[in-house]
Amino acid sequence: MDMKRKDFLKASIAAAGLSAVPELAAARTSAAKRSFRFAFISDIHVKPERVAEEGMAKALQHIQKLKPKANFIVMGGDAIYDSLKATKEYTKQQWDLYQSILQKNNSLPVYNCIGNHDIFGWYNIPKDTGDPLYGKAWALKELGLSTPYYHFNKGKWDFIVLDSTQERNEGGYIAKLDEAQFKWLERKLDDIPSDHFISIISHIPILSICAGLYFGKNDPNGDLRIQYMLMHTDFFKIKDLFNKYPNIKNCLSGHIHLQDKVDYNNIEYFCNGAISGNLWKGPYYEFGPAYALFEFYEDGSCQREMISY
Image 1 (spheres, rainbow, N blue to C red):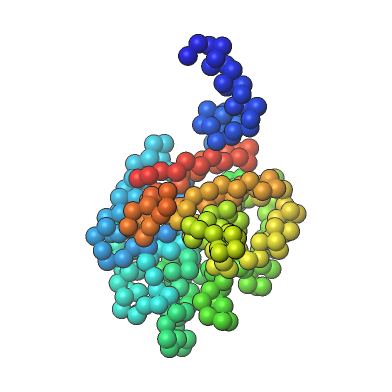
Image 2 (cartoon, rainbow, N blue to C red):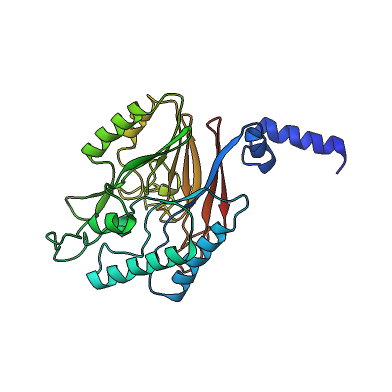
């Protein structure tokens, strides 16, 4: 290709605003100093089965070998295959397996987020609500958390980890924040210095186009359906709160097993696929097993690379 043609193509791409082109994406942050990098792994769904066990181990081993090294791991929820409808024996087997593989294959700090499948007994009939491990208690114990939502800091970046999954009166779960958590979020956002940058982590996406693509088809009337368990049903309430804080830069999630990025009102919403792909049966639609590698920069920007490990 001659230089004039090459220059013309570069200029045309820039004019079209195609920010997904790697060369242009890299240029956006080339002048910024990197603060840290981390792996976002989600939807492991580990279970006593060879493919799942080896897959989780390989993903963790791959992360340990990254160069430059990742500073930590964010685990975006659904660590185990399922405990919503499971016996105590099978739930314990899954958690023991998760802890064993993690201990043997990871040396990095892990920041955990609870997923819907990590919750014990909500789908069991009858529900044993008197069991001290019922609901989120078991997951909190296994993940080393005192509360299902919390905050941690990395220099000029503050991370807020939310609990997306609430029990639904009609049965099952719904994607939203309960009232106490929302009030906590209001206070926490107000406490963070305005010159810090904020990243929000949730298992279920706060905003995602993939939530409308999850079923792989239209409804009979042509609608794309976003069900109450696929994206935050309180998006508008959260969005109005976020509008008060221009230092909120991104939101990271899993749950959908698909990958997308939505830029909405100066916030980047990343849905980061699944370590398990289609529950260890290959890709889910176009997206195979993968994790996200994030680079966070001192100017408040970030970059994501999806890694097929």
